[in-house]
Length: 279
Image (cartoon, rainbow, N blue to C red; front, top):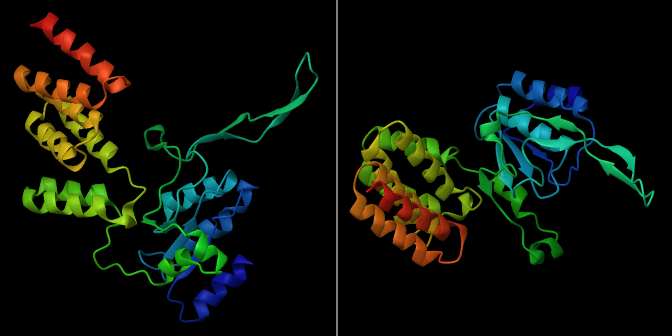
């Protein structure tokens, strides 16, 4: 099948290739190679805006491995909803009989890891978010496929954090602030966790002693997500480690007010106690 597919691509004016795996529950990883290597070999389609992979909540198991491989080695643009599987995960199974009830259960035993552990997540996030409604489904409409076929690269950012990081490094702070606001509000990036990514970037700078940069990122996060206790907690820690105890206390208390009975609020209280001991 793939031989015929790529021969067709070679011999015809093909603008785009769409691979739809949103209902693919997996199967056999050894069947992934022909499509992955075929895409890599065909520069005609292996470029941004030419190759699209539709994913969804039923993209699972060996198909998650396929998604990982396409993400690692091709210029695929993922469209749709998040996958239904951890990026790295336990798979396959063996039958085990419970000793007392004698009921059979099946336990996964094989660890599949296609990406470094720091890139692991609960699912693969699409570059372009698109959720069909029940009304569209009932009318046999497919807005996800239409989004792939009608995709335009104009003003679309494949790597939002990479783009925002370049603006930061180029000291284009006003543009960074407006672009961050735009991307966070854009439904195309609905499944991208901007808050967590900004938080991670802030802690990376904080850990390397770049206090000014860390505070800038943490403060931006509180502006983008003002109701997030975790964002204020991180900003408080940034001020504490940079030596401003007054602001650290203020923002820890802000975190407590937003999450009085939760884990973040509890952490903020512990940090305030630690600050008092240290002081």
